[in-house]
Amino acid sequence: GAGVSQSPSNKVTEKGKDVELRCDPISGHTALYWYRQSLGQGLEFLIYFQGNSAPDKSGLPSDRFSAERTGGSVSTLTIQRTQQEDSAVYLCASSLLASSYNEQFFGPGTRLTVL
Amino acid sequence: AQSVAQPEDQVNVAEGNPLTVKCTYSVSGNPYLFWYVQYPNRGLQFLLKYITGDNLVKGSYGFEAEFNKSQTSFHLKKPSALVSDSALYFCAGGTGFQKLVFGTGTRLLVSP
Image 1 (spheres, rainbow over the protein chains, first blue to last red):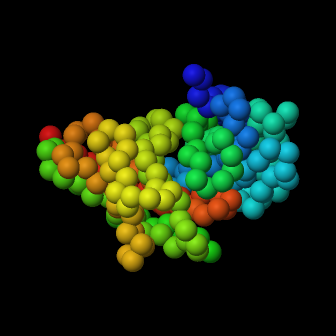
Image 2 (cartoon, each protein chain N blue to C red; image 1 turned 60 degrees about the vertical axis):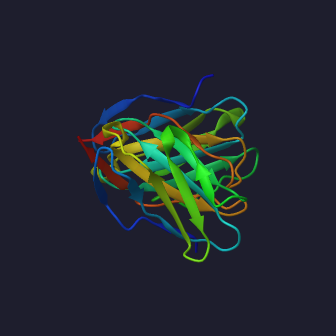
Protein backbone atom coordinates (compact mmCIF):
# COMPACT_ATOMS: atom_id res chain seq x y z
CA GLY A 1 0.00 0.00 0.00
CA ALA A 2 0.96 3.63 -0.33
CA GLY A 3 3.21 5.07 2.31
CA VAL A 4 3.55 8.63 3.54
CA SER A 5 4.31 11.01 0.71
CA GLN A 6 5.73 14.51 0.85
CA SER A 7 6.07 17.25 -1.71
CA PRO A 8 8.13 18.82 -2.98
CA SER A 9 11.15 16.61 -2.43
CA ASN A 10 13.43 19.62 -2.72
CA LYS A 11 12.71 23.31 -2.31
CA VAL A 12 15.12 26.16 -2.81
CA THR A 13 13.91 29.59 -1.82
CA GLU A 14 15.23 33.03 -1.09
CA LYS A 15 15.43 34.47 2.36
CA GLY A 16 12.21 36.25 3.27
CA LYS A 17 9.94 34.20 1.03
CA ASP A 18 7.13 31.96 2.30
CA VAL A 19 7.12 28.22 1.63
CA GLU A 20 4.53 25.48 1.93
CA LEU A 21 5.41 21.85 2.46
CA ARG A 22 2.84 19.12 1.95
CA CYS A 23 2.34 15.75 3.59
CA ASP A 24 -0.05 12.98 2.59
CA PRO A 25 -0.30 10.45 5.43
CA ILE A 26 -1.19 6.80 5.17
CA SER A 27 -4.92 6.38 4.67
CA GLY A 28 -6.69 5.70 7.95
CA HIS A 29 -3.92 7.08 10.14
CA THR A 30 -5.35 9.57 12.58
CA ALA A 31 -2.08 10.96 13.91
CA LEU A 32 0.30 13.10 11.86
CA TYR A 33 3.65 14.52 12.94
CA TRP A 34 6.11 17.04 11.56
CA TYR A 35 9.82 16.93 12.44
CA ARG A 36 12.85 18.89 11.34
CA GLN A 37 16.25 17.32 10.79
CA SER A 38 19.18 19.65 10.34
CA LEU A 39 22.36 18.38 8.71
CA GLY A 40 24.01 15.86 10.99
CA GLN A 41 21.49 16.42 13.73
CA GLY A 42 18.73 14.40 15.30
CA LEU A 43 15.03 14.85 14.91
CA GLU A 44 13.42 17.99 16.23
CA PHE A 45 9.70 17.64 16.93
CA LEU A 46 7.61 20.47 15.50
CA ILE A 47 3.89 19.68 15.75
CA TYR A 48 1.45 16.82 15.78
CA PHE A 49 -2.21 16.34 14.98
CA GLN A 50 -4.51 13.69 16.43
CA GLY A 51 -7.91 13.38 14.83
CA ASN A 52 -10.05 16.43 15.53
CA SER A 53 -8.20 17.40 18.69
CA ALA A 54 -6.27 20.63 18.97
CA PRO A 55 -2.75 20.10 17.63
CA ASP A 56 0.27 19.98 19.90
CA LYS A 57 2.30 22.95 18.66
CA SER A 58 4.85 22.87 21.44
CA GLY A 59 7.78 22.23 19.11
CA LEU A 60 7.27 25.06 16.65
CA PRO A 61 10.41 27.21 16.87
CA SER A 62 8.76 30.56 16.15
CA ASP A 63 5.49 32.15 15.06
CA ARG A 64 6.76 32.05 11.48
CA PHE A 65 5.93 28.35 11.50
CA SER A 66 2.37 27.06 11.24
CA ALA A 67 0.65 23.91 10.11
CA GLU A 68 -2.82 22.77 9.30
CA ARG A 69 -4.45 19.50 8.56
CA THR A 70 -7.49 19.55 6.35
CA GLY A 71 -10.21 16.93 6.65
CA GLY A 72 -8.08 14.85 8.97
CA SER A 73 -5.81 13.86 6.12
CA VAL A 74 -3.40 16.07 4.17
CA SER A 75 -1.24 18.47 6.14
CA THR A 76 0.61 21.61 5.09
CA LEU A 77 3.53 23.10 7.00
CA THR A 78 4.00 26.78 6.23
CA ILE A 79 7.12 28.78 6.97
CA GLN A 80 6.76 32.52 6.55
CA ARG A 81 9.61 34.92 5.91
CA THR A 82 12.12 32.09 5.67
CA GLN A 83 15.55 32.47 7.22
CA GLN A 84 18.77 30.66 6.40
CA GLU A 85 18.59 28.75 9.66
CA ASP A 86 15.33 27.20 8.45
CA SER A 87 17.35 25.14 5.96
CA ALA A 88 16.83 21.50 6.91
CA VAL A 89 15.00 18.34 5.93
CA TYR A 90 11.38 18.42 7.04
CA LEU A 91 9.99 15.00 7.78
CA CYS A 92 6.36 14.02 8.10
CA ALA A 93 5.15 10.86 9.81
CA SER A 94 1.79 9.28 10.50
CA SER A 95 0.57 6.60 12.86
CA LEU A 96 -2.69 4.81 13.46
CA LEU A 97 -3.18 6.65 16.75
CA ALA A 98 -1.20 9.23 18.67
CA SER A 99 -0.35 6.79 21.41
CA SER A 100 3.35 6.20 21.95
CA TYR A 101 2.99 2.48 21.29
CA ASN A 102 2.03 2.97 17.65
CA GLU A 103 5.01 3.09 15.35
CA GLN A 104 5.29 6.12 13.14
CA PHE A 105 5.70 5.77 9.39
CA PHE A 106 7.88 8.43 7.85
CA GLY A 107 7.81 10.10 4.49
CA PRO A 108 10.97 10.71 2.44
CA GLY A 109 11.19 14.32 3.58
CA THR A 110 11.40 17.72 1.92
CA ARG A 111 14.86 19.24 1.74
CA LEU A 112 14.51 23.00 2.19
CA THR A 113 17.36 25.30 1.26
CA VAL A 114 17.07 29.00 2.05
CA LEU A 115 19.57 31.14 0.17
CA ALA B 1 10.66 15.29 31.26
CA GLN B 2 11.11 12.31 29.02
CA SER B 3 14.45 11.84 27.32
CA VAL B 4 16.33 9.33 25.24
CA ALA B 5 20.11 9.31 24.99
CA GLN B 6 22.39 7.78 22.41
CA PRO B 7 25.85 8.24 23.86
CA GLU B 8 27.80 7.40 20.70
CA ASP B 9 27.77 9.66 17.65
CA GLN B 10 29.35 6.89 15.57
CA VAL B 11 29.99 3.18 15.86
CA ASN B 12 32.54 1.45 13.67
CA VAL B 13 32.50 -2.31 13.17
CA ALA B 14 33.99 -4.75 10.68
CA GLU B 15 31.67 -6.79 8.50
CA GLY B 16 30.84 -10.11 10.12
CA ASN B 17 31.42 -8.86 13.64
CA PRO B 18 28.63 -8.31 16.14
CA LEU B 19 27.38 -4.77 16.55
CA THR B 20 25.78 -2.86 19.39
CA VAL B 21 24.24 0.61 19.24
CA LYS B 22 23.48 1.99 22.68
CA CYS B 23 20.36 3.73 23.94
CA THR B 24 19.26 4.74 27.43
CA TYR B 25 15.97 6.29 28.37
CA SER B 26 14.33 8.33 31.06
CA VAL B 27 10.58 7.82 30.85
CA SER B 28 8.09 7.91 33.69
CA GLY B 29 5.88 4.89 33.89
CA ASN B 30 6.06 1.95 31.52
CA PRO B 31 8.12 2.91 28.50
CA TYR B 32 7.48 2.19 24.86
CA LEU B 33 10.79 2.01 23.01
CA PHE B 34 11.61 2.01 19.32
CA TRP B 35 14.51 1.78 16.92
CA TYR B 36 14.43 3.42 13.52
CA VAL B 37 17.01 3.38 10.73
CA GLN B 38 17.68 6.09 8.18
CA TYR B 39 19.54 5.28 4.99
CA PRO B 40 21.10 8.15 3.02
CA ASN B 41 18.54 10.53 1.50
CA ARG B 42 15.68 8.48 2.85
CA GLY B 43 13.08 8.86 5.57
CA LEU B 44 13.20 6.86 8.77
CA GLN B 45 12.20 3.20 8.69
CA PHE B 46 10.80 1.34 11.67
CA LEU B 47 13.04 -1.52 12.86
CA LEU B 48 11.50 -2.82 16.07
CA LYS B 49 9.68 -1.84 19.24
CA TYR B 50 9.28 -2.86 22.84
CA ILE B 51 5.86 -2.42 24.39
CA THR B 52 5.62 -5.16 27.00
CA GLY B 53 6.46 -8.83 27.43
CA ASP B 54 9.76 -10.42 26.45
CA ASN B 55 12.74 -8.21 27.08
CA LEU B 56 14.41 -9.38 23.86
CA VAL B 57 12.70 -7.95 20.83
CA LYS B 58 13.44 -9.14 17.30
CA GLY B 59 12.97 -6.87 14.33
CA SER B 60 13.72 -6.37 10.67
CA TYR B 61 16.98 -7.24 8.91
CA GLY B 62 18.19 -9.51 11.71
CA PHE B 63 18.31 -6.76 14.33
CA GLU B 64 17.25 -7.25 17.92
CA ALA B 65 17.15 -5.12 21.03
CA GLU B 66 17.13 -5.92 24.71
CA PHE B 67 15.02 -3.98 27.16
CA ASN B 68 16.80 -3.70 30.50
CA LYS B 69 14.66 -2.00 33.11
CA SER B 70 17.28 -1.85 35.84
CA GLN B 71 19.77 -0.14 33.54
CA THR B 72 17.08 1.83 31.69
CA SER B 73 18.63 0.71 28.42
CA PHE B 74 17.42 -0.54 25.06
CA HIS B 75 20.54 -1.37 23.08
CA LEU B 76 20.27 -2.44 19.45
CA LYS B 77 22.24 -5.51 18.45
CA LYS B 78 23.01 -7.73 15.49
CA PRO B 79 25.14 -10.88 15.64
CA SER B 80 26.89 -10.32 12.30
CA ALA B 81 27.10 -6.89 10.69
CA LEU B 82 26.75 -6.26 6.96
CA VAL B 83 28.18 -3.36 4.99
CA SER B 84 24.61 -2.58 3.97
CA ASP B 85 23.75 -1.97 7.64
CA SER B 86 25.70 1.28 7.46
CA ALA B 87 23.17 3.99 8.22
CA LEU B 88 21.93 6.40 10.88
CA TYR B 89 20.07 4.76 13.75
CA PHE B 90 17.60 6.50 16.05
CA CYS B 91 16.25 5.30 19.35
CA ALA B 92 12.90 6.73 20.49
CA GLY B 93 10.79 6.40 23.61
CA GLY B 94 7.52 7.47 25.12
CA THR B 95 4.73 6.44 27.41
CA GLY B 96 0.96 6.47 27.21
CA PHE B 97 -0.27 9.17 24.88
CA GLN B 98 2.83 11.31 25.24
CA LYS B 99 4.60 12.06 21.97
CA LEU B 100 7.72 10.07 21.21
CA VAL B 101 11.09 11.53 22.07
CA PHE B 102 13.94 10.71 19.71
CA GLY B 103 17.62 10.37 20.49
CA THR B 104 20.22 12.31 18.54
CA GLY B 105 21.11 9.36 16.35
CA THR B 106 24.14 7.09 15.98
CA ARG B 107 25.91 6.64 12.70
CA LEU B 108 26.88 3.00 12.12
CA LEU B 109 29.74 2.39 9.74
CA VAL B 110 30.41 -1.22 8.76
CA SER B 111 33.70 -1.71 6.94
CA PRO B 112 34.29 -4.56 4.47
